[in-house]
Length: 179
Image 1 (cartoon, rainbow, N blue to C red):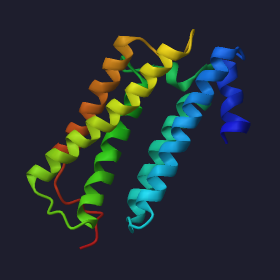
Image 2: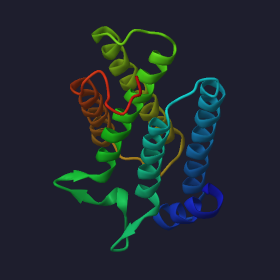
Image 3: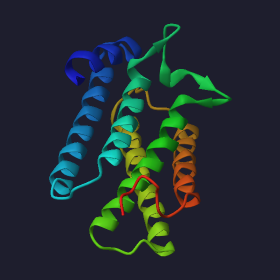
C-alpha cells in the first residue's frame, strides 16, 4: 500500500523532492519497524475480535487523513468544529491504544483496578510521546518537511491526553467484553 498508493498521495501533497522522499521513507521505516515489533510481541496473545476491529479503524482513520481528498485537499488539512482532523485521529487512537493496553494487562492476569487504568493512561501518553519524538526527529533531519511546528506537536499531545481521559471516564468493564 505504501509503495503504490500512499507514496503517490504523499508526492502530491509534499512534492517529489529529496526531502519529501526522505520524510516519506523515514515514516515508512518507523511504521514498518513498529508494526513488526508489535506483531512479534503480541502474536502470542489472543485479543478479542472487536478490539482488532477498532485498532484497524484507527489505522484506517490515519491513512484516510493522508489519502482521502475532499475538495482537492487531503483530509488531514480539514477543520471540523474548529479542530483539525488530525486531532480527532489522535484522540481516537489514544483511546483505542488505551483499550489495547488494558486488554493486554487483562490477558496477562493484571487485575483491572483504578491504579491499572491510570497506568494504562500514562502508558498511552508515553506511546504518543514516542510518535511525537519521531516527528521531531524528522524536523531535525529533513529540511522542508511536512511536520507542523511546536503548536502542532503540543496539540497532538493534548489530543492524546483527551483520548486517554475518555478511556478513564468510561466504565472499567466494556459491555462488548465476554465474561
